[in-house]
Image 1: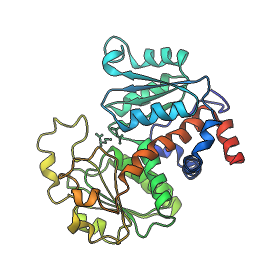
Image 2: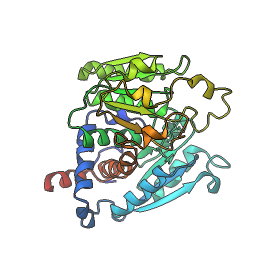
Image 3: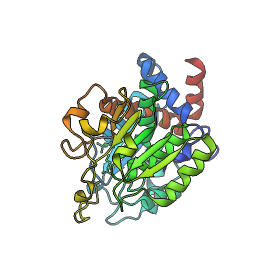
Amino acid sequence: MKNHEDKIDLLAIDDFQKNLPDLIDWALRIKNGEGLVDEFKPLEGMSIGSIYEKPSTRTRVSFEVGVSKLGGQPVTLLSNDIQLGKSESIADTAAVLSRFLDGITYRCFKHQDVVELAKHSKIPVINALSDLHHPCQAAADLMTITEHKKKVNGHISWVGDGNNVFHDLLLASVSMGHDVSYATPVGFEPNSEILIRAKKIADETGAKVIGTNDPIEAVTDAGVIYTDIFVSMGEEHIKDKFQSFDGFQINNDLVSYADQDYLFMHCLPAHRGEEVTDTVIDSKNSVVFDQAENRMWAQMSLLTYMCNENAWHSFNELY
Ligand code: CP
Ligand code: NVA
């Protein structure tokens, strides 16, 4: 690890509350000058491990390709193939991986597990999705909003489950000064401790946070409409959860209340015909595949900042 006095971890996006705008700006510049990646190899000689306890398409590919583009070696560790969760503790796994690797990303069920891994690891740890947070998604999402709209015409609206993706979207949006209005069914509101954190940040930036159980109220005059699957990975056992989301589908009727140039966003994978119709996700307002691509550029910024801070700053100065 180079430069930071102590290793830094990214467990939730508010860990990087203050420097999020700069991290996003860096990601946009490396994306737009892609040729530069041929010369810029800040992770040369480094290996970044990625542990997955749940399936992934975007996170896995974006980390593997992004690490390679930066000159590093990606090491993917699927939970079925490693000792973690069978005969080895998180603490011992962290100690061992710290002897080989220069950074770890971890997709886990319980958020406490990534906290534990970070506590026992001597190298930076990135949360690649837990039941409470998805910081890499939020970094890519705010990058996508910045890329498409210099100024968002209206608030960011969330309709659906008050889940991991929403928690970090909310924290990141208020950190960047965006107003957020969210609608969830009764009983599926966001985590109350995370809401308190978000409202504290909103007080600092002047952003407003409004919660409701009415999707029409949340999307009226919105500049961004965001949703996610109603039943997340690991929640399949929650009986009848899906039925609670009647009336929460993003369809032509609901989006007619938003600003006409609204952006439609979804972290993907989408369950078409459930939380969103084809008419919306395939419309000109939809930026879902830009979000997917931006996972890679945003994570390249995060990894370079966390594993080689000097190189992150020198790129900033050079380009
Ligand atoms: N959005 C997201 O994290 O996708 P994957 O589950 O495919 O990684
Ligand atoms: N909320 C979803 C996001 C998937 C990328 C889940 O946790 O399954």
